[in-house]
Length: 602
Image 1 (cartoon, rainbow, N blue to C red):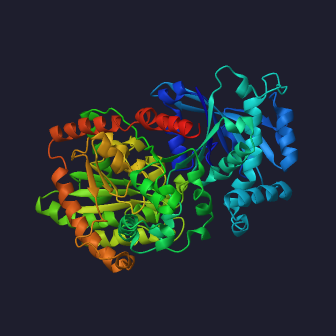
Image 2: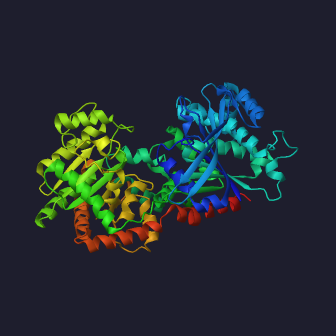
Image 3: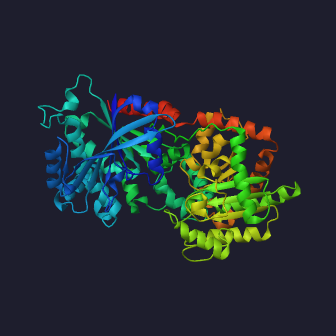
């Protein structure tokens, strides 16, 4: 049996991708059977909502000390000038009848003492050459550095103190006849200071630290994202540079500017010191190897993300599609033959302009076949969503979401640029129209009275004929393939990490349920890295225009013509998704990765 410690900013609630991964991993039968105890460690943010905790056992500021460890935890608070919360959080999957109760340790470092922090920073410099002074203006760096020592001490208390509340003569963890293995997992850069603290204590001969194994869990490579997103050549430029550079034995500092300007890089640069590294996609492995020489031969473990596998019958699929068609007909005065969707965060990495490029080619193809379609884009810069009553008012006043106005409560930030592209497309298209819903949610309450009353969020997943997700940077891409088991065609770019998992799940067969858009393919191989580095907006537009034509033709050839085709897509999609489930991920990737970490640290 093992104890696993996850260090993340999403310790008490899901806020993004890491939270989704935790929900996927922990709510599986395989994880529950193999892992004796799970800890989640993270910062206690100002005004944090602790209602996500099932139980609060220690929170001195609120007078809660219902734990035999209260005195020890109080001592840690006094030593470092922090506030601690120890509680429990429940993970559950009702469909699979799974419930897992985890321990949560939160640390408020907003008033932590400077002296212990300075001493720890000196150790980070002395042992790992991390120049903390370069990054002290970055609160994210400071927060996780300040969290490391009190979190380590609190974890040590909970692992080694006897149940009666008195400290045993020797660590309880070590006194057990078959002591569990303890794995400290840094989800992205956030847990690296705690990992390095563990390594420091291990080097000092601490018995508890000696039993701990450290893992860096790469949900992305933080160093790479700004390089891809920040240059107009995007993925086309970067991944071609990467391939050529790796063939020549060059690392990132040989090609791009010194990455140590970025505090996240300074921390993940030390990930090779861990007992194991997990990467969520094949390109993430390549990106890590590109960081520095120590990563080149490091045995990085692929640990893909899982995706949901829902069983749905043809009647359910068609009923959901009919609701989407009803909505489109109400909005656009025609009933589309095909319904396309893109449910995503509104960020540059998602490459939403590529949807419109593919649709530009597909529009004429559908028109020549006397077919029509609609694309619903569900995305917003306002993560919490606009108030329902505001949406209803915009719908009444000027026909939202077909029509938009610049400025809150309607279009803000990147929504404006996307809507400009949508409007330009709709002005000239014949067979396809795009509806941009800049709202969080998919129901009559959240999206207006013109939406069918029985509509629910799962309809946009179940009823879709094709889901777009042609990202420029996507370490995995769960959302892109969520509709797979519902028989949708998933149109993803080759830089999405899910492509590698799909290929494994399909035995590298070319299946009708997945269209992979390879925008990084260059017809004429460039003669040098320097040539590729000059790729900019003009070169990208030319390549995207050419490649999107091929994607449109391929998508048209795979769209179902008859109900029998839909049924076959549902069956194939479910079988693929089942081989990409979280149970598969835990059994075939996550747990073997833990075992390799154990062997590496032996």
